[in-house]
Length: 59
Image (tube, one colour):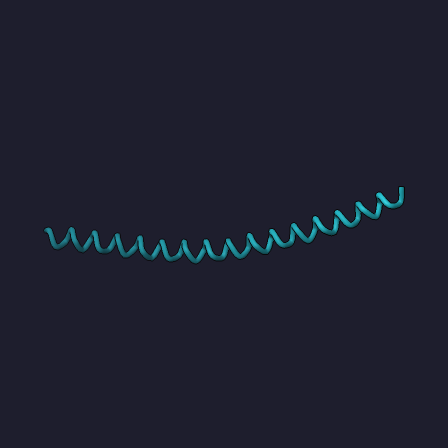
């Protein structure tokens, strides 16, 4: 009985470890996506700022 409980506990711990690893990989992927989106936003902001400056010079 005690051996069976330990095996169940071991199984659940292994499953949780696997899940944590999957989540770590997912977090790393999301960090990369987040960085890419931040870079794109900065690029768009620069472009919009330059465009607004051109409009201001026309006045």
